[in-house]
Image (cartoon, rainbow, N blue to C red; front, side, top):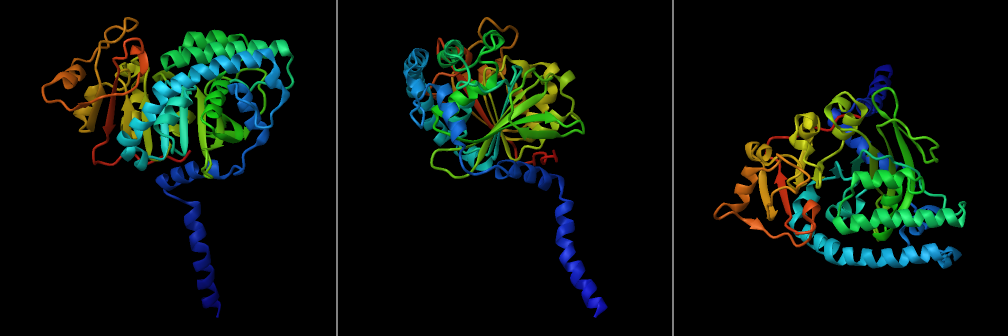
Length: 397
């Protein structure tokens, strides 16, 4: 009888032992899956209302602020500009992505978008089903505005700054660091959270929760409930927004990190690197990336993208074409290749130009404007699918 009891105890305990010692891949997958699942599944009405206010949309509860002159002016002008951007850029982008990114969407769970800043709009248009979207920028995370508790003059200044920030994005399709720094420095729109909130509300997303992310001092990250920050933390740090897509009950998350990803600030044993390396089944997207991934100072990030991405979607400002070609990636080209704009020198890629212009090259059209050539609309995109050899498994984070 004692032996039978011992065997029963061992049989019951064994599954628990397996759960406490998962493989690296299993631990990474568990970490990715637990983040949205740990949050409540219902939208927070107060956050939804605030995001609508930020976006210049009529609030769900029909609050009186809609009668304020500052809100009315912002709502009218930005709604017209957003409508034009949605019609000419986002709608054709979404239709294109439904076809051309079908396999990439099906294969991936996470989206990694370095150099994108708070550009939730483009990422969501291309990869709306991703469970975890990670956006990166040098600029601060900032605070959500206290629109209810602030004087009317403060709200007027806030909407003026939001108009300047969003209008320039809608004109070009990307943010300019100097412009963001100038606006953030005035203290009303003081970081990326407000811009992300604008895009999320305009896409009809409902907000479940907002949390802060900070290194825990042990190589990992601490996630805490949102609170206003009186001073800017030292980079890297971040915030997570857990949200619901319209008509979809599954929680998803977008994370924004304020960070420096140059090699000297981004070693492989850093909490930030471990977070990115812990993403599960990753698609990487880069546009308007200042050609930084061509330089040796950003080789750590470039190698991470090549080692861990199932698919890479990018323009010519990202990973040089030769890395995909020499690495055996399956490549599909879209649009037209043009010399880099005058702000950048010594970054032209003759091999990529040749790939676009070679006789018989199967280059597909790109039916929307995209990136640095927004004036001429001579844009390019490359979609690369990794070769059959396996990608590196996610690391525990």
